[in-house]
Length: 113
Image 1 (spheres, rainbow, N blue to C red):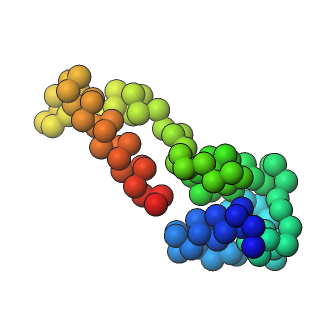
Image 2: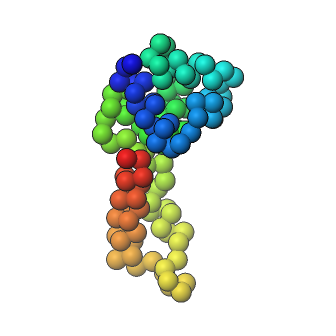
């Protein structure tokens, strides 16, 4: 097994997903193609690497190189916070914004480990 295939297997198993489910999520008609990537027999092309990163919510750098910063930040936290309201409909304060950002970043970093 390659390091790439080990990361794929670990990500999939960490989510409790089957190989078939991942294959369907990235648009493959055959689970065997995906399974061969996990077994290290073949490797996906760049388009599939991008799809895998999206499905697993990691960076392509993490998939390919094992970069420790594996969680992508697909959500702009500032925009999400601006759309939120604090307790009892009060506007979000600067303090609230800082606390929410810390909580979300901590949550997003820990959920993929």
